Image (spheres, rainbow, N blue to C red):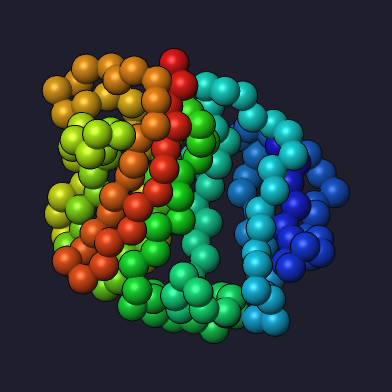
Length: 171
């Protein structure tokens, strides 16, 4: 796998080696306090049935969805606002990973809806630990039936906030 990290469109980190399965993880610490847009670009190393990002445990905290990017090293507490970071891959075939950041001790509900607004799958309905979280959806409904190709919506709420994102399932 090869990748690079960009801040406001400029590359700030690009390792000189290709990472292979089984290699030890590499910890990188970057100062992003003067930027507005942080991107991780994966250039090669994936296939349609396996997403290499699943083994990564990257944590990035921001104050709010619209706030400035902060210096990650100096931030010791998770944000007070819920953030839905989206899902990958999107579109997806076999499974997709939904990323979100939960405020401290927030009761989280993460539900998948079809285009008719019908609830098809409840992924999370419980109190979660605060901080970065992920949920994996395999394209089935609550009864385990395989759903057809189409547009679905991921809705996450915590009683105070509600966020929605579009997911495309391709069979």
